[in-house]
Image 1 (cartoon, one colour):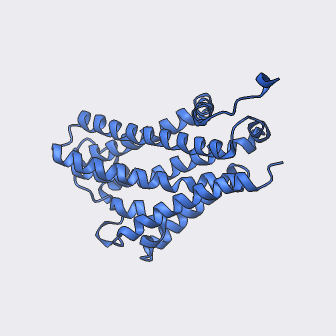
Image 2 (image 1 turned 90 degrees about the vertical axis):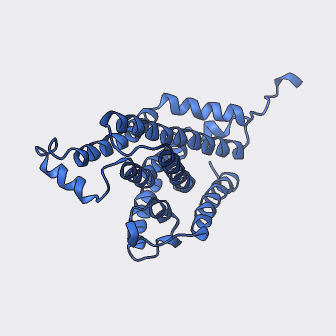
Length: 268
Protein backbone atom coordinates (compact mmCIF):
# COMPACT_ATOMS: atom_id res chain seq x y z
CA UNK A 1 0.00 0.00 0.00
CA UNK A 2 1.22 3.46 -0.83
CA UNK A 3 0.19 4.81 2.54
CA UNK A 4 2.19 2.23 4.45
CA UNK A 5 5.59 3.77 3.61
CA UNK A 6 7.00 5.83 6.41
CA UNK A 7 7.65 9.49 5.67
CA UNK A 8 11.34 10.34 6.13
CA UNK A 9 11.86 12.42 9.25
CA UNK A 10 13.29 15.89 8.87
CA UNK A 11 15.77 17.93 10.86
CA UNK A 12 13.06 19.45 13.07
CA UNK A 13 11.89 16.02 14.25
CA UNK A 14 15.47 14.88 14.80
CA UNK A 15 16.25 17.98 16.86
CA UNK A 16 13.10 17.40 18.90
CA UNK A 17 14.12 13.83 19.57
CA UNK A 18 17.62 14.83 20.71
CA UNK A 19 16.17 17.60 22.85
CA UNK A 20 13.82 15.12 24.48
CA UNK A 21 16.74 12.82 25.29
CA UNK A 22 18.60 15.71 26.88
CA UNK A 23 15.58 16.85 28.87
CA UNK A 24 14.94 13.40 30.29
CA UNK A 25 18.56 12.75 31.20
CA UNK A 26 20.55 13.87 34.22
CA UNK A 27 23.25 15.53 32.12
CA UNK A 28 21.04 18.57 31.49
CA UNK A 29 20.52 19.70 35.10
CA UNK A 30 24.00 18.54 36.11
CA UNK A 31 25.62 20.66 33.38
CA UNK A 32 23.45 23.62 34.37
CA UNK A 33 24.48 23.26 37.99
CA UNK A 34 28.14 23.00 37.00
CA UNK A 35 27.84 26.15 34.87
CA UNK A 36 26.13 28.16 37.61
CA UNK A 37 28.86 27.21 40.07
CA UNK A 38 31.25 29.37 38.01
CA UNK A 39 29.77 32.79 38.91
CA UNK A 40 29.23 31.69 42.52
CA UNK A 41 32.87 30.72 42.99
CA UNK A 42 34.13 33.83 41.24
CA UNK A 43 31.73 35.88 43.37
CA UNK A 44 33.35 34.40 46.47
CA UNK A 45 36.77 35.42 45.20
CA UNK A 46 35.54 38.94 44.50
CA UNK A 47 33.97 39.19 47.94
CA UNK A 48 37.33 38.31 49.44
CA UNK A 49 39.08 40.96 47.32
CA UNK A 50 36.48 43.67 47.92
CA UNK A 51 36.14 43.04 51.67
CA UNK A 52 39.33 41.41 53.05
CA UNK A 53 38.17 41.88 56.65
CA UNK A 54 35.15 39.66 55.98
CA UNK A 55 37.44 36.93 54.68
CA UNK A 56 39.98 36.96 57.52
CA UNK A 57 38.45 33.77 58.87
CA UNK A 58 39.17 32.09 55.52
CA UNK A 59 42.91 32.57 55.34
CA UNK A 60 43.51 29.97 52.64
CA UNK A 61 40.72 31.33 50.46
CA UNK A 62 42.08 34.83 50.90
CA UNK A 63 45.52 33.80 49.72
CA UNK A 64 44.11 32.03 46.69
CA UNK A 65 41.93 34.99 45.77
CA UNK A 66 44.82 37.41 46.10
CA UNK A 67 47.04 35.12 44.03
CA UNK A 68 44.72 35.62 41.06
CA UNK A 69 46.09 39.13 40.78
CA UNK A 70 42.91 40.73 39.44
CA UNK A 71 41.37 44.05 40.42
CA UNK A 72 38.51 44.15 42.93
CA UNK A 73 35.99 45.69 40.53
CA UNK A 74 33.71 44.76 37.64
CA UNK A 75 36.59 44.83 35.18
CA UNK A 76 38.47 42.20 37.19
CA UNK A 77 35.29 40.16 37.71
CA UNK A 78 34.51 40.11 33.99
CA UNK A 79 38.10 39.16 33.23
CA UNK A 80 37.94 36.16 35.57
CA UNK A 81 34.57 35.18 34.14
CA UNK A 82 35.90 35.10 30.57
CA UNK A 83 38.89 33.03 31.66
CA UNK A 84 36.58 30.62 33.47
CA UNK A 85 34.30 30.06 30.47
CA UNK A 86 37.28 29.37 28.23
CA UNK A 87 38.68 26.69 30.55
CA UNK A 88 35.72 25.43 32.58
CA UNK A 89 33.46 25.79 29.58
CA UNK A 90 35.67 23.45 27.58
CA UNK A 91 35.18 20.79 30.23
CA UNK A 92 31.41 21.27 30.56
CA UNK A 93 30.75 21.63 26.83
CA UNK A 94 33.12 18.77 26.09
CA UNK A 95 31.31 16.40 28.42
CA UNK A 96 28.01 17.37 26.78
CA UNK A 97 29.42 16.64 23.34
CA UNK A 98 30.72 13.29 24.53
CA UNK A 99 27.34 12.42 26.04
CA UNK A 100 25.24 13.39 23.02
CA UNK A 101 27.19 11.09 20.74
CA UNK A 102 28.49 8.47 23.13
CA UNK A 103 25.15 7.64 24.74
CA UNK A 104 23.94 5.82 21.62
CA UNK A 105 26.71 3.26 22.06
CA UNK A 106 26.67 3.07 25.86
CA UNK A 107 22.88 2.69 26.00
CA UNK A 108 22.76 0.28 23.06
CA UNK A 109 20.37 2.49 21.07
CA UNK A 110 22.50 2.89 17.94
CA UNK A 111 20.71 0.17 15.96
CA UNK A 112 17.32 1.54 16.96
CA UNK A 113 18.37 5.01 15.86
CA UNK A 114 19.58 3.79 12.48
CA UNK A 115 16.27 1.98 11.94
CA UNK A 116 14.37 5.26 11.97
CA UNK A 117 13.39 6.84 8.63
CA UNK A 118 15.91 9.65 8.95
CA UNK A 119 19.17 10.33 7.15
CA UNK A 120 22.39 9.84 9.07
CA UNK A 121 23.58 13.35 8.27
CA UNK A 122 20.30 14.65 9.71
CA UNK A 123 20.91 12.76 12.96
CA UNK A 124 24.44 14.12 13.24
CA UNK A 125 23.29 17.64 12.41
CA UNK A 126 20.55 17.44 15.03
CA UNK A 127 23.02 16.34 17.69
CA UNK A 128 25.38 19.20 16.91
CA UNK A 129 22.50 21.70 16.86
CA UNK A 130 21.27 20.55 20.27
CA UNK A 131 24.85 20.75 21.56
CA UNK A 132 25.10 24.30 20.28
CA UNK A 133 21.72 25.37 21.66
CA UNK A 134 22.29 23.95 25.13
CA UNK A 135 25.89 25.19 25.45
CA UNK A 136 24.77 28.65 24.33
CA UNK A 137 22.03 28.58 26.96
CA UNK A 138 24.59 27.59 29.60
CA UNK A 139 26.88 30.45 28.58
CA UNK A 140 23.98 32.91 28.83
CA UNK A 141 23.12 31.45 32.24
CA UNK A 142 26.71 31.93 33.44
CA UNK A 143 26.71 35.55 32.28
CA UNK A 144 23.31 36.31 33.82
CA UNK A 145 24.35 34.60 37.05
CA UNK A 146 27.53 36.66 37.18
CA UNK A 147 25.59 39.91 36.75
CA UNK A 148 23.24 38.88 39.56
CA UNK A 149 26.07 37.82 41.88
CA UNK A 150 28.06 40.96 41.16
CA UNK A 151 25.03 43.14 41.82
CA UNK A 152 24.32 41.43 45.13
CA UNK A 153 27.94 41.86 46.20
CA UNK A 154 27.97 45.52 45.22
CA UNK A 155 31.15 45.22 43.17
CA UNK A 156 32.38 48.72 42.27
CA UNK A 157 33.30 50.08 38.86
CA UNK A 158 30.19 49.28 36.81
CA UNK A 159 29.62 51.04 33.50
CA UNK A 160 27.53 50.35 30.43
CA UNK A 161 30.49 50.50 28.05
CA UNK A 162 32.47 48.10 30.22
CA UNK A 163 29.55 45.66 30.28
CA UNK A 164 29.16 45.82 26.50
CA UNK A 165 32.86 45.24 25.84
CA UNK A 166 33.14 42.47 28.44
CA UNK A 167 30.04 40.70 27.12
CA UNK A 168 31.49 40.65 23.61
CA UNK A 169 34.74 39.16 24.87
CA UNK A 170 32.97 36.61 27.08
CA UNK A 171 30.63 35.30 24.38
CA UNK A 172 33.45 35.25 21.81
CA UNK A 173 35.43 32.98 24.15
CA UNK A 174 32.33 30.84 24.74
CA UNK A 175 31.72 30.55 20.98
CA UNK A 176 35.30 29.46 20.29
CA UNK A 177 35.05 26.91 23.07
CA UNK A 178 31.78 25.58 21.67
CA UNK A 179 33.28 25.20 18.19
CA UNK A 180 36.10 23.10 19.63
CA UNK A 181 33.72 20.82 21.53
CA UNK A 182 32.56 19.26 18.28
CA UNK A 183 35.86 17.38 18.52
CA UNK A 184 34.60 15.38 21.48
CA UNK A 185 31.46 14.44 19.58
CA UNK A 186 33.67 12.92 16.91
CA UNK A 187 35.87 11.22 19.54
CA UNK A 188 32.80 9.63 21.15
CA UNK A 189 31.56 8.48 17.74
CA UNK A 190 34.86 7.04 16.52
CA UNK A 191 35.56 5.52 19.94
CA UNK A 192 32.01 4.14 20.20
CA UNK A 193 31.33 5.53 23.67
CA UNK A 194 32.13 8.12 26.33
CA UNK A 195 35.55 6.81 27.30
CA UNK A 196 37.39 7.85 24.15
CA UNK A 197 35.86 11.34 24.29
CA UNK A 198 36.69 11.86 27.96
CA UNK A 199 40.25 10.66 27.33
CA UNK A 200 40.52 13.10 24.43
CA UNK A 201 39.23 15.90 26.64
CA UNK A 202 41.88 15.31 29.28
CA UNK A 203 44.56 14.98 26.61
CA UNK A 204 43.75 18.30 24.92
CA UNK A 205 43.50 20.10 28.27
CA UNK A 206 46.96 18.81 29.18
CA UNK A 207 48.43 19.70 25.80
CA UNK A 208 46.80 23.14 25.88
CA UNK A 209 48.55 23.95 29.16
CA UNK A 210 51.94 22.63 28.03
CA UNK A 211 51.92 24.24 24.60
CA UNK A 212 50.72 27.57 25.98
CA UNK A 213 53.58 27.51 28.50
CA UNK A 214 56.02 26.80 25.65
CA UNK A 215 54.72 29.76 23.67
CA UNK A 216 53.03 27.59 21.03
CA UNK A 217 49.46 28.07 22.21
CA UNK A 218 48.53 30.33 19.30
CA UNK A 219 48.96 27.34 16.97
CA UNK A 220 47.05 24.84 19.10
CA UNK A 221 43.29 25.40 18.76
CA UNK A 222 42.39 24.33 22.30
CA UNK A 223 44.74 26.97 23.76
CA UNK A 224 43.28 29.85 21.75
CA UNK A 225 40.12 30.62 23.81
CA UNK A 226 42.11 30.76 27.05
CA UNK A 227 44.80 32.96 25.50
CA UNK A 228 42.14 35.25 24.07
CA UNK A 229 40.57 35.57 27.51
CA UNK A 230 43.87 36.76 28.96
CA UNK A 231 44.38 33.84 31.31
CA UNK A 232 48.15 34.02 30.73
CA UNK A 233 48.29 37.78 31.34
CA UNK A 234 50.78 39.97 29.51
CA UNK A 235 53.16 37.01 29.22
CA UNK A 236 50.72 35.09 27.05
CA UNK A 237 51.42 34.35 23.40
CA UNK A 238 49.69 36.92 21.17
CA UNK A 239 47.04 35.45 18.91
CA UNK A 240 45.88 36.69 15.54
CA UNK A 241 43.42 35.88 12.76
CA UNK A 242 45.25 32.65 11.91
CA UNK A 243 44.66 31.32 15.42
CA UNK A 244 40.92 31.88 15.09
CA UNK A 245 40.98 30.29 11.64
CA UNK A 246 42.63 27.19 13.13
CA UNK A 247 39.83 26.96 15.70
CA UNK A 248 37.11 27.21 13.04
CA UNK A 249 38.91 24.70 10.81
CA UNK A 250 39.19 22.25 13.73
CA UNK A 251 35.46 22.47 14.43
CA UNK A 252 34.55 22.11 10.76
CA UNK A 253 36.87 19.11 10.41
CA UNK A 254 35.30 17.46 13.46
CA UNK A 255 31.77 17.90 12.09
CA UNK A 256 32.79 16.66 8.65
CA UNK A 257 34.65 13.67 10.07
CA UNK A 258 31.68 12.74 12.25
CA UNK A 259 29.28 12.80 9.29
CA UNK A 260 31.72 10.81 7.18
CA UNK A 261 32.04 8.19 9.93
CA UNK A 262 28.27 7.80 10.18
CA UNK A 263 27.98 7.39 6.42
CA UNK A 264 30.87 5.05 5.70
CA UNK A 265 31.66 3.03 8.81
CA UNK A 266 29.75 -0.19 9.40
CA UNK A 267 27.42 0.34 12.38
CA UNK A 268 26.43 -3.28 12.74
